[in-house]
Length: 458
Image (cartoon, rainbow, N blue to C red; front, side, top):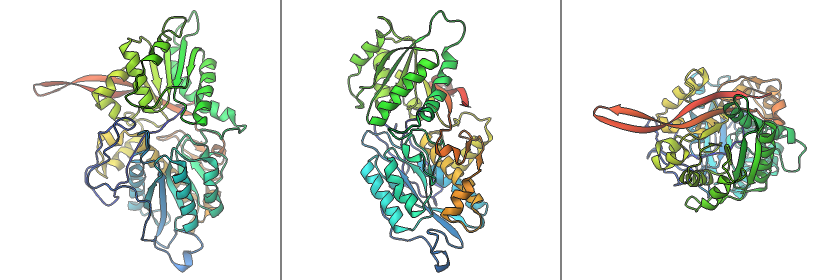
């Protein structure tokens, strides 16, 4: 369940206009949604409704609970979490229509774009903590969050709920990641937790590859881009997990560039001869979508015969766009959420219905950032319900204690245990094509097919 993340734009919760997006995150940039959409504001002039009686609990009035989102809506590399707030708004919309939580609606007042920049993320958190206008930060879906940067939220008594492979969700009683603590802070002693998160990803792949009697372990290459010290550690830990799963690792290369139009042929040539002059059976990609697609295209040109797997290209744009789909055909894509193609999952069906109620189309509904926002809001609501009729920061964290969040669109979590351990679950999709006939026209279209539904490891 090594996870990397993709992109989104704030959406007006009061609009019923259709929402669509066809631009692939991480490569060509994103157009966002329709003209009904607005850029997530970095400031807000209208303060949430307050009363003297509620002043001791920021953001809480007799009628509503104000929350704020923080997300990497845009990113310098193009890989962002566009539309994560749409998922949260869809879940809050249904909760509010059902009467809210203990009679109060939940209002997502604004979503701040940190642009994948740690300084912007830190400034936003400082602002949220100092203004004392919001009860919680939800969704928090940032690529830039460092462990030290969440300290102001804890000091101000502001819970935060979200998703991402960031150490900010680890070891903080105020932080709740829907997939738990995925990535331990560098230098921490929690290596086993990170290894468990890696093993969910690797085990799902191994079940597809390690079938039948083998004379020898299948060979594997691990390639990625080390855009941060944490990503270097992630690649090393992934290599350990691949070996433990029964593969022979013949190449570990974390030096890939993240420029979309870069010439990846030298790296492809190295991969193709890494198994004693022959190509490896499996290539594990761990990096930004640009490097995954770039190297996959170079490998396709060299007619690589094996299996490629990555946790980055699970956005629908990678199957609807022919130029992107072609090099990825046959690849396995790992995602920490139950895919929208898993129509037998009632929780996923409900999420799809909630998003369609806001006018979202299939291209938007399938985005992982949308799911991240939705399940962040769902977990927040589950904890808020247990916080009682007069919610405070203390009652929120106390309400979370003992909560067993059920298996739904994400794996099950138990609190406070998952402050320190990941929810180690992964589903696998395959990039595929199918022929569709519309009248006298026959089209070849791309699609994701479910190879393995969301499965968790102990």
